[in-house]
Length: 252
Image (tube, rainbow, N blue to C red; front, side):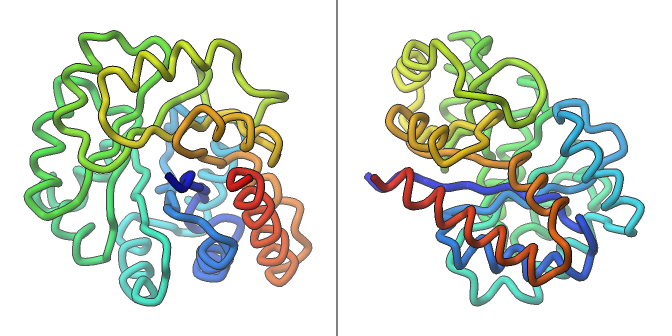
């Protein structure tokens, strides 16, 4: 099976005008899914790199509705599927769960990932999204219990996102230890592709993870690349090159 490459960006960072070109660069570089991060004032699951990007995007005037409008405008000719990565409150603000599901479907999103969604909320949330054909993407950690996995499995209709280390997002040196046992435990209970992220910063990291998982998610390392860009052209070039390198690494 082809390994899945799932890059992440914070919408509206570094500048709102760069949003579409960055998404296109990820698509052209070979992404299978692209996580569109919705900036939020209290991003509890994110490390400093994405927190800073989120604040900058908010300062730039980025809102969930702006993101939906932008994606709806240029979604048509992208090859990659899109994931709406948002905390719970901004989703509720999109006319409630049912309203949000309709908005996501209309904009062309494949799925939605909510890092602060509780297990108690997940079933109802997944049902509301499924009614509009939008997939709920669960977040699974090494600390996720077998009981919780059994409850997550029936509402997982696309893929699951596994955190390879416990804690907040952020690129780290090397990949987490003990991944074999963790992946085996999840695979036992979840009959869906399982991609792993949080801490992947190089093509070598991605290759090592992809040997065990069904794919990789890369976020903070990409945000840092964007921070270093001199201008839009430089940013697009850096992003597309890095995505292509990741693609090549996980396909080997």
